[in-house]
Image (cartoon, rainbow, N blue to C red; front, side, top):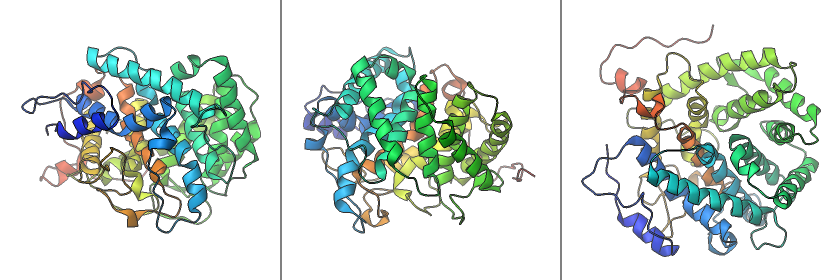
Length: 412
């Protein structure tokens, strides 16, 4: 168990003129729990985005760095603010929806709830400095869907928005309907927005949902893995998008219709298998194969494994405590490298520190905040087995320390 250093949080709070976070005030001699460590790391990542947008100063203070090979730097910079907000919120949403916990955690959550409400108001208000881009180019569709899944993961937030803000959110989402998604994972972005409309009893388009679900069923290639469009390519998009989105869309529409019950059961089996694969991809030190697109999304490579744990849907052979250990190792490996953050506390492009050459043509500073999705299990109370069970080695640690472990096999 590592100790939290106090120097970076102090500099961070001074830079933003914020009260010194109780999560940064840790005695160097004290051993902290995994949950407190996760909260401290999540706070470090999310604070600059949520604080600034809540204060209508995100455009003023967030530096926007684009890929050196950017396909359209002007457009990528314009949408970076929506990316930063929606992606940050998608990861913290389950925790925002939780009640209870230690006094310091409740205090921190209450602060983030205030910020989340005000940040949403500013993002959708055309009169605000931080009003975000909703319709130019294709990227707004992606990140409107991240905002949609945030409201589905945190009904508390949607319920506490005023009527004017709710209407502006709906109007923003409707603007994305004119964006035609590429024939790949993007068809699930349209489905997620319609699932949001479905959940909150708004006018929803069942065709957009069914199209994505049926198409991905055709793109299933076996052993828990979907192809991202007709040509298969190895990357982490089954975790970044496919499995978490399919699970949430099916969960929502199944409340309204029985049309997808068989598909929901099939996805359950596939999701469990892919969770097993994901857990085994994590090396004893928390590293994992740095292959495929969007590798600078850091811990979001394990969005699916975190989502399965947060929804208490892990397969029987994956114990929550071992998944906690595996995800903690990933967080430490991807967030504790030198130069992960710039001197003002914003994320740098990279996987382990600052590695701008790893960026794809569409990456920018805002894109990186999808890494908060590795923290989804913070939506479980501290009394849940995920947090309360004694620490347990995860699979690669057992294997590479010489323990005898049952072999791995595909679904069939």
